[in-house]
Length: 287
Ligand SMILES: C[S@@+](CC[C@H](N)C(=O)[O-])C[C@H]1O[C@@H](n2cnc3c(N)ncnc32)[C@H](O)[C@@H]1O
Image (cartoon, rainbow, N blue to C red; front, side):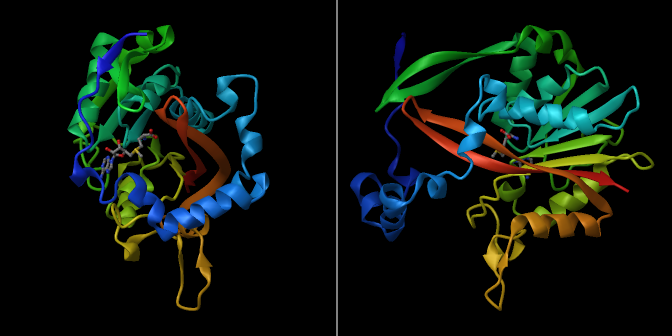
């Protein structure tokens, strides 16, 4: 295993609290009380989703599983276009391109670095990256397109843009038949604007589809609280849940919710620590 030097210790400004100080907080006390004393079912009610014989059945391959959801719900026309809003480094886009019916696949992301990496995956078909082994030791790893993704990667285009304001013209031309927004909703400053823009980006006259996946990780680091789509208690103390609030917001734009599912995702922090999220996946059709 080739080890490389880490780029350096985290800067103080990267986090307000470091090391042991984290364990002095009330937040940590609450987390650890749950960790040590709650039942397994309480801690991880989705455990059943993590079992399965192949990686397609559990928390890995999240970007690719979402591409399959888009394919399953795409309008039945022989040629469709699909927009991956907040595409990051393009994982879903390259799988979307492998499906016959998607003739045009566009990925848009705010991050220039992510779009550069997606474009590089398209031209080079692989990229090397560093990953944390443990402590401050890193190793090199390689991200690769699969053979089938390589065959169809030419269908993809990647653009830098703001998902809340980007127009079809800025995203390469005509409006889209299908839009995927994977784990984007709670990462934009104005989710309502994002939903309105998704409608504006859809082709009229067909059964346009919007697939929204979100773990509803609302935080004021990304979205002012008065703009959250759920995840708070109202004036009477009643919990406003994000699933219902999102469904209502989409209904106001003329969308019908046709499928919901829970989809786990696992983000590796180091070889012995993983971030597990469960995105709520909603499939909407514009009526
Ligand atoms: C949590 S990541 C999800 C990435 C990817 N869709 C996935 O599921 O792995 C959120 C992504 O949204 C992008 N993003 C955040 N705000 C955005 C915006 N206003 N317009 C476009 N992309 C944005 C980020 O750069 C990042 O790639």
